[in-house]
Length: 513
Image 1 (cartoon, helix red, strand yellow):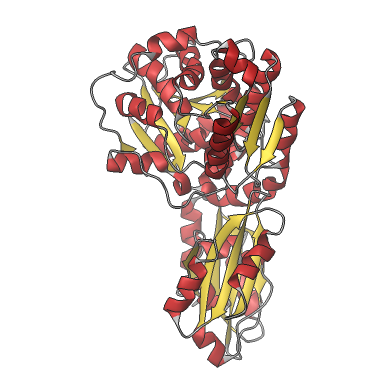
Image 2: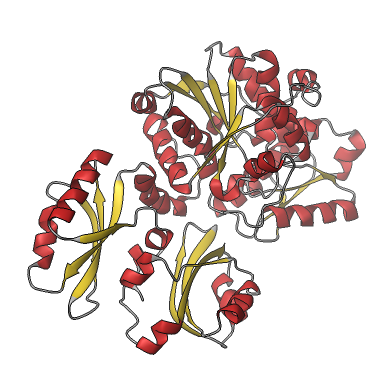
């Protein structure tokens, strides 16, 4: 989704950054990151694509800029008392590295779900760590409470003018490059880097467009633009943990309304594809939030040609356990792998006839389980070179009399069905009362047991599939037998996990009901 921002027409809130950014102290801990040309991505998109390589910072993220600028400007008395911060990882490393450089005591509050790689890196700088809550918002509340009690200086991850100014030095470096870019793409979590970069570029070169990029399951800026005020999201996706923020910062939004041209939202699959794209051009594995800006650039580039586009590659602190999911979903995000549910008659030779339909196309998976005496459904993954080749395949299936459904974008299919072994619920009375729900919860020790204990034993669970997606969160698919839908939903709402009902989902009907 692309959403244009109706700018206020003034730089009332942005003007101060014309002084704050040049005065920012960042280069004691940060480097002027290079801007590199991305030949493979450029060739695919028909535009000249460049990457601003913040993944090459000493902490593998841009966050050392803003954190150091904030901390170095504390008074001597504040430095002596120490500082506290809350972060899922990158800001924590920025604060910890700054405090080590300045010999200041610091405490970092990190969510329980924080990847181990980020916890280890924070400890490497000598910071004390307190793990609290399932997300950044919960950690923020705890850190603010401790700061008040112990009189520690709180270093906000994004909503602070000095932090914004530190991140704004990236915009300064982009203009110094003299490459005459047409559009700059910036990742958005709480809006710190977008506010800083846009404040500098918009006031120094009005020809350059500035686009913020969000993941669609944590699009707090897009919602704020629609409402023309900051709003708090009820639910935030956890996959791109570096931008998993429920509300854009106040200082940030004030600047964004004056300086940013539009905001683009992209899917998790598109982010995974962008991780792959960056790797192919740089051999660096970006974290999901680090590849977010490029995912937005690719969406934007579908409608423009021969432009100079630059995306900020903002971080490379990827959790290794998440790579399997990224690889799997990158094929779908790139629109190369299709998932089809195909109905076949339960007679000898059906498999062979179906297999011949795929010809030279690469079959990535083939899942089957007999479901009745007369017919069955087969879940097939097939890699296609172009959209046209997929249309050709569908035409062949239709001519041969096969009925099929495209499950490529079906959440149950992608997250659960492809990884399940089993068949239909054969109890006719049970499946008539079965309701199916999908949800996700932060992954931490005892998370699954905690959910099941809260769910209790009042209703019978008829189907359950849990899948961890790289230590930060797990996804569940649950079938529950109940004749009273309202009572069941009220009970689920008290479990602490947000669910979406999928009883009418065709993937469920074809393979599991």
